[in-house]
Image (cartoon, rainbow, N blue to C red; front, side, top):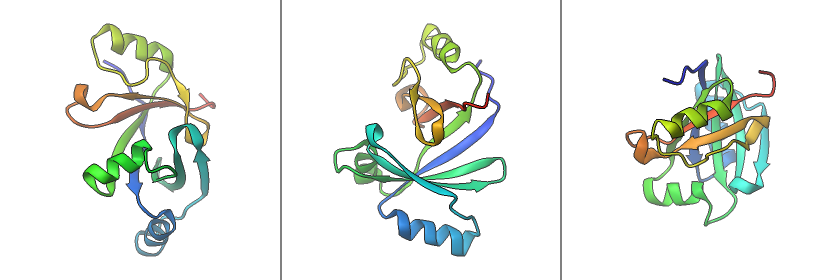
Length: 137
């Protein structure tokens, strides 16, 4: 069992970041606090804090990127759920030893300065799960 601290964020794949930010701000009342580009993941990311978690809007910067492929296959929508953990490298080693299929066997730097790693949806009942550890922990 991998104890999680909380849901860190929900990643939503979108075609047009500006349009979706406007919707969340005007209709839902959640304000965008920052936007950044993550070149190695081929995305532009907008952060919208909501309580103890965030909504993370993901717009592909490359038609061959993972978010673009997700949208092509599934349309816009929830792309992943991220759980905050402590000792991310240790958790990944435990999961691998338990036979859980991993996309990332070691952490990489993600948006917002977090160390992240993804678990493969084929090993998580169809949901792309992200584990993340923030610098402040």
